[in-house]
Image (tube, rainbow, N blue to C red; front, side, top):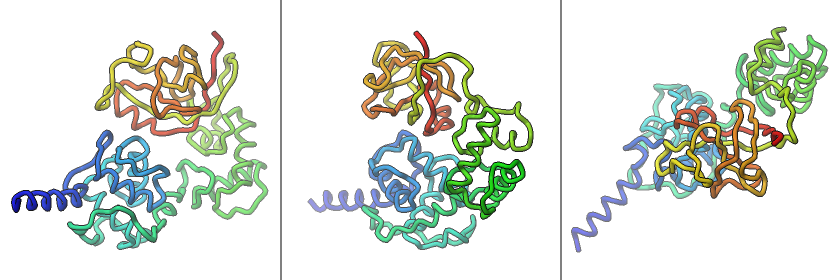
Length: 308
């Protein structure tokens, strides 16, 4: 009995130090993943429940955190990322001034996180900073927004204050400019929009161009990626076809199986698969590698329903 209690004690201590002892990555599951998700939620970087599954949303949240802190951006929660993430969640370091190499308290070995009280959200503010050349979206602040507002003012699309805050008036002006250039008017300043602002209208990405083909209708969806190469995934779809790029998983009540579509940034595809989490306007795009899933991430995109 004494041996049993000793083993249980060792297991409890091991659980609390799981993240600091081993790298967690896409596809992992368990208490360690749930712990880092709790920290990410505390920092307002993860807008989902702490379900203990290291999926695309967790990868992207870790990448945002790593980018904001000047760490290597790989989406993997290794010992260094875990240590800094935990300290940030408990407000043990000043995220706004911390730099790689600065002191970080060692995490305790006997107090696994169940919830983080008094959550601080300074990391979100760092992530929302936009420099010149960064992708700029609603709510972002910084020199990049100043540059954008000045450009839009020079071109006659923006009449507001150049305050470095990407608010409603800036987004609306950006949409008007994008429409004038034939770019998809999403109010997001990406590579193609930067090129257009500089007078280059030939350097648009496939994602930013409007299609020039016929289609029945267009719907906005939240698109994630998946691959048969992921742990536990099947080589075949729900309809029995081989899982490959060009297949998408949909809610058949929203987009019926067999429907042919076009997705900017992905290409032509056919709805041949389903998934438990794929409901309403959520879709999953099949890729041939896990790396491509990471690169795609999670996006709000239009799907063009093609003619039969």
